[in-house]
Image (cartoon, rainbow, N blue to C red; front, side, top):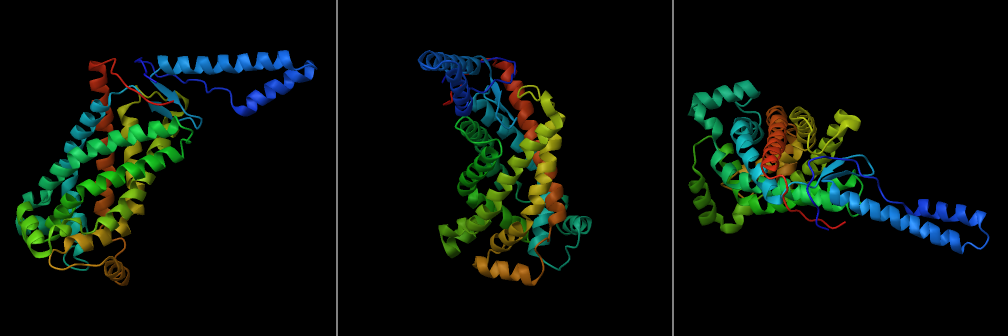
Length: 356
């Protein structure tokens, strides 16, 4: 169904359910022994309600699902990708120092990296302040385009699920997990290189890590830790989007509007959801760092899990991880929505299509 643009976001009534139709028919039959005229009248009424619903969809760019979450259908997919890419660049530059601190604390358990400020001072004293941005290059190369696909893919898949009978509880969970798994597989080599660069105390360039890994272990080495990364990212993304959508709806109440939600609401919802998801998946992130940070040996998943458990290191780096992820998610989602709103205002009638 091709949808036309409208700057207003309006709640659209849902069509008759089967139970409503049954109730209407039974009621009419009780007053008409023959039933034929009542059944015909009920059928016409149901068809008329469904026709009005379809017409409402065509004249509005968002709708509210049964569980009361507003969904935006108005934005062109290319605008979504552009907005997410721009937001990812901002987020990568701001969040990388905390990522470096978190990785060092997780990889070098019980060493000189004890706490956020102590670790930051040690890194700066050893390699200079620029070392806090170690791994920014592979992050920009991979995460910027990948995030564009991730955010736009999530919204497309979420909208698809909501219009095909999924509830506002399950749609964000499935859409978040599936879109993240797809992106994780594509960007795994860059994630491995970034983690290896940040875990090493000695300075290594992206190309040095790449050449050493390929020459020593072959190209398959670039996908080391893919399994644990998927185990971390799928629940993180599912829980994040589920929390974000519902926190945002809780803040807005009945005043939600897919086109005019304040940026502050996106920021707060993204920060709170990111903080909870980061804390929940931190043990998996520690295991991932132990596998990808070691460039000299092949670390098996079982061995890494056992070492982390025995060292009681499940929550190593949780401080900088939460401090990094919470503002990163807040900046990412608010920048994404702001850029999307700006682009939409410049192009008020973008073409779009979805199956109802």
